Image (cartoon, rainbow, N blue to C red; front, side, top):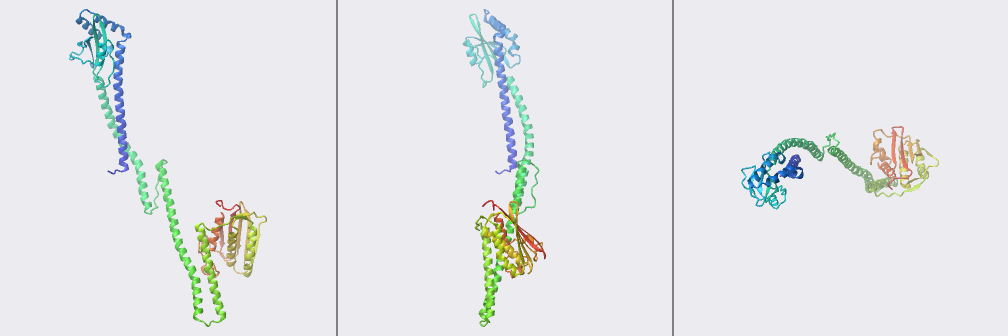
Length: 485
């Protein structure tokens, strides 16, 4: 039968209290019985020891009387006079005079007893030894002391029927039973409170887990407790927050994937459409002038190159995403790399009548990285600065040491980027002005690739821009390269 945690916890505490009370009661009663048994035999031992020689002497003198009746009468009188010492005034304890040879009952304080069984202690006394062996399983306590008297011998037999012990045990049992009932009522009430204190947070966690499983992250659990339940609640909230963030990332990734596929399709469709259009025109109109045919073929070649560039950039990003984009790290001079890039781009800058200047700090430290990849980044940034700066503008390349790294900046006074677009320029296929970007041959992947390369080197890249005033892109590269390579 299935029971809730609440019910099981209450039952466990109930049974635990019941068991502890029962064990404690049994132990207490056993200890009380043991105490009375030990007390009986201790008192009997003391009563008939040398410390009470007078009573023993009186008993022996009485036993030495010539007639049995006289001997028994005086022995009874002696025992009666020492009733307090023997503890026989309680009514539960009796004394008897037995024949020392046969163990037959001669006389006793309890007239209702006419015959006594031959107990182990009586048998020992018949053999002349004091019989004071305790038997906790017996319904009585007894001691038998042999008393020699001339040509006859007698046995003083003290017997306790345990009535006092039984009554006291019954009283204690009643007290324990009452205490158990009261304790159980209290324990049940406390266990209910404890169970509620423990189970309620678990039930709240269960409800919250169901909400999270259903995609509802709007109501985090509140817990001010510093115990294990509080830690569990906080951990659950952290897990739910992390799960919400992960699901958000997955949704964004899915959206980006869809946008990526749409962008790739659009980017490839445009040159394919151009190529097909010009090719069909040349096919349908065989008599085109040579100049027109050459122009059409030039467009087809340019569009083919553009498709190749898109595919190459996509392949590069795909390798980066898969972690297979190979990098060859080695120390090299950033000054030499920048001068090489400057030499490669100066003619393009001059073609647009730009003033292209370089300011490189003397004794720039060598850095650890992939020179070819970084030169690709430098050329991409400079190429963008040249393309998006109106003819006759300025492009400036700056390199400085910055802490434990090298800082490289490409500045221009071109058209700039709107403030709302600045955070998105490193996203794949993102273009501020799509028409102008396609006209200049851009794919929308260059800055994404640049960001990937810089971050693979353990560096950072940042952009600041003002519309119609210009753009500044700064990348910082650590001298020692990435830590994990």
